Image (cartoon, rainbow, N blue to C red):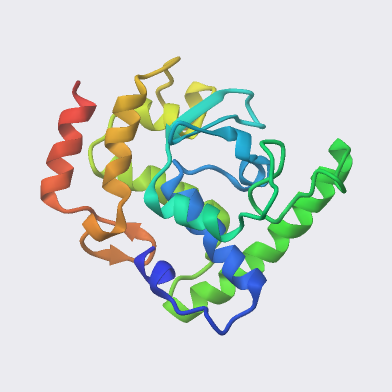
Length: 212
């Protein structure tokens, strides 16, 4: 993940930079998937938090807006935007009015995004880099840090036991926020491709959260 973030794309295509931004946003954004990223509106940002209803499960999601995510949002801000405008340049509320139009557009951009991510992955030595890898990595980092699986399930918005083995209805936002602090890439030591092993100090801290 650090390699993806550090890669210089200043001379690349806008769609390539967008692909990287979506990947990073997903990783720091509790593993939010592409469909939900596409549907995110400025109205979903409230009091320094991201609040939305997951499209796949209809489950409400609420997590801390990190500095990394905020910086990405600023890149795509336009003058005169309203709470009803989409954050990322994937959908346009004036153009994509129907469910089918939104689906078709989202599918098209996802395909293009994953194509760029695979190219980015080749440059940094990560095979098969996709938007799903960001979501999987988020969950893997927390799991390897000793975070309770139920907390991971809650933060990912899973709705059944088979998805993450243990499912509970809700957790305090503070528990999820505390666990997410371990995602800050400056605080993570070592990486094997996209599977990151956090430092012992942060692992112990998260073990305390998981036991609370």
